[in-house]
Length: 595
Image: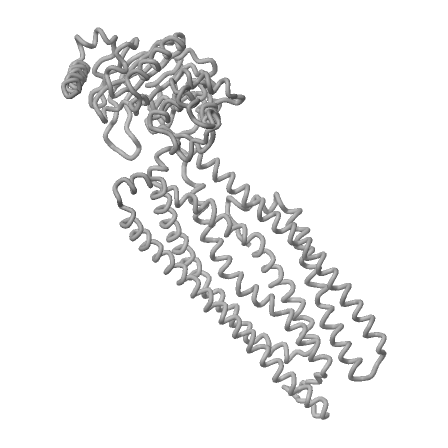
């Protein structure tokens, strides 16, 4: 059996399926033992010239047994495999929920390829053990025991001859279990690296092609693929050696049975029974046929006993990998009885707010104090790396913050229910992500009942409606993975449309108009001021022109709040803002001079 805190509950949950399946398996194991008995009786009738009609009856019995075996095998297959697949599906669902809850930091440290390997290869390995592993375990124990009992009743010494080598199988299996686990873990890790490399290259295929690095990447992939192949071959070699050992033992047992059994039968026919330690072996031809039949049945439990060891080793290694993933601590959680924020006014207040990322000791933001009033449209500017994105990310509770330093509508953000808080915010990140779906569905992603009308409304707000209608399929155009079929500006505007149609009290635009032309940018900003008059909007920008007409602007300088005021006042009080304005004016003059 396979035990662990994430799978133990499934034994109870799917107990009816396991019980029915195991009972059907036991029934099949039991009734198939009648076949050697019937064959032995047929041989006895043929040797002694008994009732020939009895042979026909025995033939009918064999057909009945075969039919019973067919029904029993059908039953245990649909129950045990059903339970195994359900366990796999539920564990995958549990892992998916975990993946959704994990912080962004985890995905910075763990590659997607490794995670996908846990979701596929490792879960399939665990499922295999619940299905085939259960079958092998039951057969190895029950069928092996009852077959052995029948063999002992036929002839004790012949049974001992069979079981002397079988001890070697058991010892060999226990010796190899830990080694199998180590090899399987190496194999899975090699596959993770292969998956990681392939996923990364396919994602960045445009960069590879643009820099003409196809050959270099092919050679790099070949090295990783060879390492993966060598690791798989090493594991396969170990498995083959193990299986060959089992096959050799089985062949030796059959050789011993036929050799000694034939000798015993021949001696009995001659009337010279062989005494062994005072016990005379009186093995007849019909008993030998019956014994060989039992031995033939015993082969499967012996093979199962051999295969269950590497299978259990693989599943234990895979379960350990899955458990490690499920054990990852979720650092950002909703508090118990957290406040469910609804119909937020959009007031945001920072009180001596400081923040540093978990992986860094240095603070990204230092003692920020400001209040964004409901309905204000506020810009955030500053040099690269000054903390602009960090300032808006903390509002989404991507990371824990110090209690009593950040408030939304007067509520400490650490006291709010995370899902309810995020539902009050529409967010457009720097890295505009689109799903491989229709443009309509991408725009309506945040809505429960979105339609083409809502998508068109959002597209017009973002100034991308004409572009979409220019496509052959219009709003039913498939954007491709990560929006690969669209330009950077189109992706940005569709992302803005997606955030707009959510109609949230707070809208955050994180430098998401950098890839659009000035005219389109002005259209979007104008629409924000017209259509979101009573709602809070925060616009992070690299260009000063983007925020010059907003209500207020936050100016950050190396993580500190340099100023928070109207654009007009900042031109008098903020050195960083004044410098940014002058640099932008020089850039315009330079561009104009080169035309």
